Image (cartoon, rainbow, N blue to C red):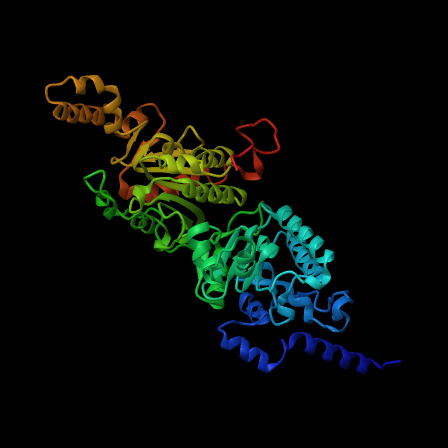
Amino acid sequence: MATTQELIEEYKRKREHITSMGGAAAITKRHEKGQWTARERIDYLFDAGTFTEIGTFVKHRTTNFGMDKREIPAEGVVTGYGKVNGRPVVAFAEDYMALAGTFGEYHGLKEIRAIEFACEMGWPVVGMNDSGGARLQEGFDTLETYGQLFNAQIRASGIIPQIALLMGPCLGGQAYHPIMQDFLIQCKQTGFMGIAGPAIVQAQIGEEITLEKLSGWEAHAVKSGQTHVVADDDKDAIDKAKMLLSFLPSNNVERTPVVPCTDDPMRVVPELDTVIPDRPTRPYDMFKIIRAITDNGEFFEILKDHAKSVITGFARFNGRTVGIWANQPMVMAGSIDTNAADKGARFVRTCDLFNIPVVTLGDCGGYMVGSEQDWKGILRHGAKLLFAWADATIPLISIMVRKSYAGAHYGMLDKGIGADLVFAWPTAKVNIVGAKTAASVIFAREIRESANPEETRAKLEAEYEELYENPYCGAERGHIDDVIMPSETRAIINKSLDAIWDKDKDHRNFKARPWRKYSNINL
């Protein structure tokens, strides 16, 4: 019978073996590749001394293919909880140094337990993905556990924030794991994600392509729109995850953290009174407006490199988290195409799930037209935005900066689709279509039969523009709550948030809606 001291020594040996990460040589090799170990990533994420590991001694039960002789420290994934900037968070970090971090039955069960524990406690979960994929030696057990993991993620969706950090390879079925989380941060040099790697792609369809081009950061941050934030390396990815967490609540029944504000909430911004060019077709940078009105000019952009005609991200107003949805006139005149509509709808619904008010800054001539967009389903994708606005229960504030035409008028949020408060700058041009389009339809015959068609066209366009292309028609009907000076925008937003911040507190349904499971959004 072992003595107490012997049992303690055995415990120390076991723990030391599990936490040694393969020894100093293996760690050095890892560092030479510009990557941290799983435990170094965990240590950097959490406040010093707050992390508690769970599932340290979990091990697989597979005996086939020599697996009975293979010991995989912590089953290839470090899981536990602690505090990030003083707030509780659950995390797991896949360990590529332990059988390439492959996903097997008990590896998956550890991740499932982490997600379920986070859900039970109402804490965010951060997953660090760095895996060689499925552990094929475990066969059906691996296959079934993937389904259980996806189920756990989906059940947690909308209850707690889920953030994925793509720090290594993540290919095949494993790639559904990070993609189903609320936000995905991808390391530029080391993060790869795809339904299959280059070898399988070539074998199945004959396409030759590199891993970087197929699954790297540009593939997903720029083209597919599946990566929300790009990071330079492990440290940058974790820093950005910490920053993102600071904007989010711990769960769907809590409010977002309010931080001390050193920026006067009623601050007037005189430069905004001259930011809009005199010529309505001339672009300007919407980021100038965003940085002028937010607390200390700070803005955390989401999907920065994808669908750049629109802007999404988080800012603060008087210390309170707010989602920003804006057009970018510098790109495609701020038009909304299929990708932009998806980008906006997903962002608005995420904000709605986690009680984050949204402020829109609108300058959009319409949804993108043409055969390419029609065939890609612009109507279906554009409708997603409308569903997102109409379903939302959060405070919604619309600022009409310049153009607000046709379907984009609703896509950028108006009173009819669900805005709580709508304000317009004097430069706003709000109408069903622009003057040029309207005149070509209404006055087609008059222009055609005129002695000087171009002169007549210009005259009638000017008359129509003066009559309808302004914010006052909407204000006269009460669809626009007020026309404001651009310099007053920050103060107006803060006063509006003061008024409607608690509009859905305790889920009070002052605007009662019939019961339903959910809307049938155009997915």
